Image (tube, rainbow, N blue to C red; front, side):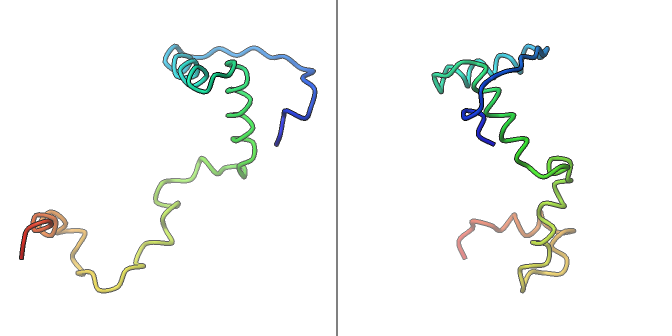
Length: 91
């Protein structure tokens, strides 16, 4: 979006929960930027996403991977603990 090329003409005020504000300040300090710049960066990144992108369920994000690996046991989901128990053991 590139807000740095546009003059700042509007001001707004928002209320943030304490933990969110603390994280915002931590990131601003780490990046050595004013809090407002970190907010603008985050908002710019968010607005570049397609609408609804963050509302997708996690399974929808990996759906294309389901069934993508051949040769796995048919009962892997129901017996995952049994298969993982042997993981890392010398054979």
